[in-house]
Length: 445
Ligand SMILES: Cc1cc2nc3c(=O)[nH]c(=O)nc-3n(C[C@H](O)[C@H](O)[C@H](O)COP(=O)(O)O)c2cc1C
Image 1 (cartoon, rainbow, N blue to C red):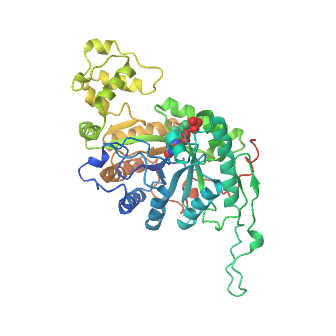
Image 2 (image 1 turned 90 degrees about the vertical axis):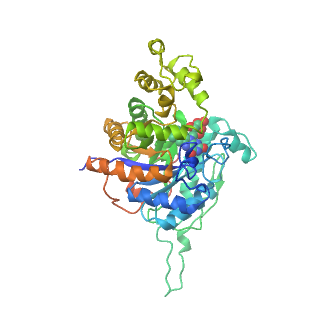
Image 3 (image 1 turned 120 degrees about the vertical axis):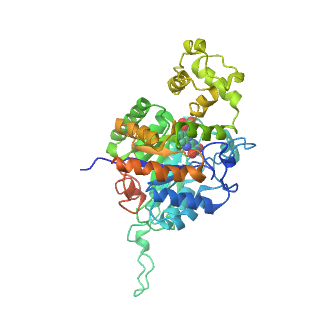
């Protein structure tokens, strides 16, 4: 048996990039937010790199201040992925949708239609959503956590039951007998939970992978239990190898407790590479991107991470010897040891920040080799099964990753050279599943 290979997922936010200033980059298409051709081009580049799946993050709200920064999310991932499905052949198409603010019938129908239209490449990142702005868009408030997760279990099970409401051979299409479908094999699901219900059936036959693959992201112990029962892929935010190992092993243990093989669940660690000819060039790229963020606030944040009272006037100076001697890393922030070690190297505070020490995923600004080194170290340590790539600015950052980092990973024998199959389920080596997973259904009240 060959060693498992690293899996890759390309995060899509808004069409521009993961960094707030990505829209201002020279060469970026200013209308990337609304231009489907741009998304298609990036998806095709990811497919050239044999990346297993695209992944649209999403919250149904305009979450952030867009006076200078790009939106956190796209217009509507379903519309964009439908366009991408038409122009790509192999890459998986994962999008996020809330279990709190959607009805299972709508979710089941939309994801299954995408799955069929893409010939078995759809995945659903099922999240509970914690943003009050999203709740307000549905005229409600964010429910208590226990309720959100109880509902999430019901929603996933009802969705999967609906996906299985056509038996695989129900669509007959027999011209000779005049039979379009065998309606004995298309049956209601008649599910009534405490929070959601649906009669069914769906009006959609199975896809080449049967039904979409489930992903999950975040949410502490509750999220872990949700992922352990239903997810094939989990999007996670470890900042260190140790955190990755701990999360992955907790996830695998929870999957086993739920009656599944731990290898069925893959952890994707969020990662932000900035690929350039040198560390200096990568830092300069990030410094340009950082012009759209509040650097004074970042300096204060850095000070809090190092337990120093830093003045924004020091932005273009390194820490003084006295300040270095007084660094205390914060036990509350797993990013602070790296911030301390970069600061001790003598970079200006602007460059320390450009290293991404305050970003929401680990950042490697450097050469393709340095980026590959980081990924190899995490993967081989068992800190993840793969990465969810948050590319700084898509217009040239996706190509840089695909054309420079991917070949190194391939040469090192840790990443595949081509897709083995055609469906997302095959890309993830996920077992066949149709309808609910009988091993886990009913295991939770
Ligand atoms: C890596 C990662 C990605 C996430 N992506 C999304 C997302 O795209 N949309 C969303 O609404 N929430 C997203 N979340 C948030 C979680 O779904 C969850 O709401 C959050 O962790 C709070 O947990 P709670 O629901 O238990 O309060 C993400 C969380 C993590 C860790």
